[in-house]
Length: 241
Ligand SMILES: C[S@@+](CC[C@H](N)C(=O)[O-])C[C@H]1O[C@@H](n2cnc3c(N)ncnc32)[C@H](O)[C@@H]1O
Image (cartoon, rainbow, N blue to C red; front, top):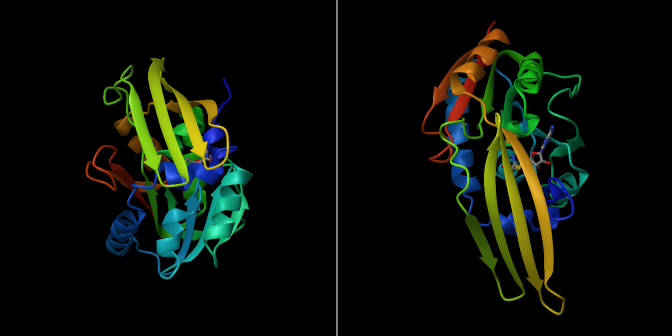
């Protein structure tokens, strides 16, 4: 089974697949949190694993924004959609943009793709290194081990006149990894229905261990149960001076 094709071959359908995700409201919450917790003075914002750049569309008028992602196909969608933002290809574990930011955010559980604690630590240390003193880190985590309920079938659909998408998945846990097997059926006007299968592996990271890693990386850190979505919470770290 091919891995993460949703972010490669299917990148052009990503915004349709998540048509009901409320990026506008999420971005308003992000702005409020930044206002409340950020202690540095600047407005440099980095969106790590930015995908198609949807949050940046709503944040670019308040911040000077850069988006990075590991997949060119997602970045191409972002570049077409979101103007006046710089997008670059980079891996969250080891990127170096030779500048420091007031805000670094890694949203919609993208952090789970680092898979292991070793790479979680590397990524968080890297985020902290790239923050100014008093700068803020926002990480919207993937589920932790007890919260993730494997085995249940999942389905989402998108329907417009010219395109219909059905996405179904099942999941399992292997050690501290969640493995999601996805299938997509895409029907487009005047084309054959296409079927794609895909696999996503995301680390199930304990919240208290993640907070310790953040503290160790020089961030005063907290977990908020009510984050951007109701089910995942939000980790906030402020870089110590
Ligand atoms: C669920 S999407 C989230 C995209 C976007 N933040 C959003 O809220 O819609 C996960 C993103 O993580 C990216 N990604 C996966 N592993 C990565 C890595 N090691 N470094 C940077 N980006 C990564 C994928 O290409 C994909 O765009």
